[in-house]
Length: 217
Image (spheres, rainbow, N blue to C red):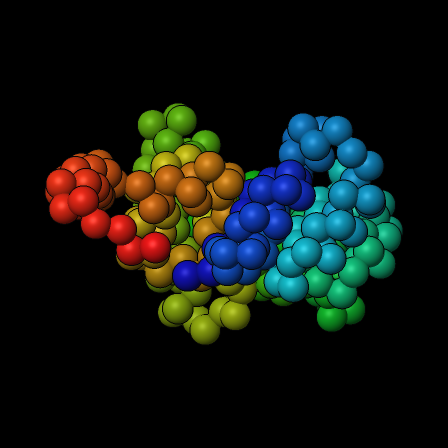
C-alpha cells in the first residue's frame, strides 16, 4: 500500500520523505489555510520534495471553471494530481482533464456508486472519506471494501486512495482490505511505529545493559 501524507507542512513532508515513507502528498483548501502560505508557492515546494503524485484541489464549483483551475494547477509540476469534488460538475471536469492525460483525484466520496462514476469518468484516484463516515455512525471500511470489490469486478484502473484516516487501526484495515493508497496526517504515520510492548521491552533491555557496565562506542 502506498503512503501519501495529508498535509501542506513542508518540514513534515521532508522528514517523512527522507525516511522513504512518502509515496505522494494530498492537500486541500483547509490544509493550505493551515499552512498560511500561497497555494501555488507551497504546492511547488512540495512537488520539488516528493517525486510521487501531489494532489492540489480546485475551488471552483462549475465544470468549466474547474477545468481552467485544474489546468493552472497542473502547470506547477509534472507530478500534480488535480483534485476535484465528487459532484456532477466534478465528474465532467474529470472526464476532460483525464482525457488530456492529467492525473485526477476525485475527492469527498461517500458511496460506492459515486466511486463507480468516478472510475467511469477516468479518475486516477478515488478518495473515500473513512473518518467522516465513522463520525455519523457508519463504518468507513465497509465503503473501502465495496469499492475494492466493484473495481476488481470490472477491472477499473482507478486507485482507491483511502482518506480521512484518523487512527493506526484505519491504516491496518485499509491495508488488509486492499486499498491501493492511504493518506494520513504526519502524526498518524509516525504512530504506526509505536507499541507499548516495544517501549516496555526496550526499557528492560536498557536496564539490563546498564547492569553490564559495558559500552559499544
